[in-house]
Image 1 (cartoon, helix red, strand yellow):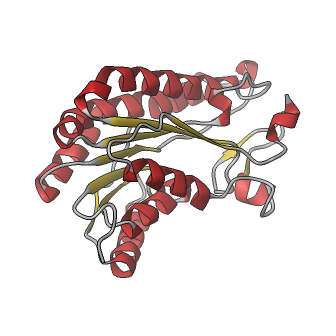
Image 2 (image 1 turned 135 degrees about the horizontal axis):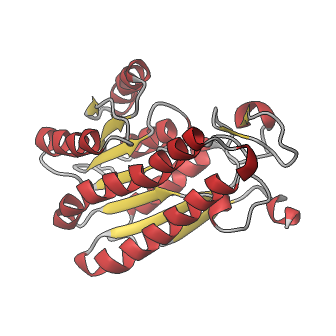
Length: 250
């Protein structure tokens, strides 16, 4: 049976857990061969074996720190060499450190910006020539925090505002080349991702902070990613995924 992404190749950054892992599964289910990129090599290998066996697709793992420009270039080069092209890039890798400005160390600030901003830039720059060639799809994981002013963790929020602005500007630049660009903006997602809260409490993994039904699930974000990838070309500029009471906070 033909699947909508048969014959396509996807790179997923931050693929070792959470949104990245769920998205890799969804893309593979729809027929794509998937290249898994993250820093945790053992988890990547386990996921690649599971996905390949379950969805009868080709997988590859490329341990990558998206803060390292050369490593990101090597990730894209290895993908194109192995699969003879690139059709989908999911810019997902991201993290949060600290909370308020006064309490955020320079080291944590640099780590967050290097990952959330530089990492997406490096990956996008390396992938775009190949996505132009394939008339492919570029998907960014943004955030509710990238759309609404935040009373806490302003640097993380600012990095996601950057993601959204960058993605939409790239879309305006490459749309005539047939490249689809989509930003997926979830509210809190029940994964191991963590961020401090309103009162400056210690960071807690969202999967521990929220019960089922109280926040977005990683699989819901993955379905939005797969939906964008299935469009040919994708004219879906943004998809927002909020738990129902989210806007009541503002």
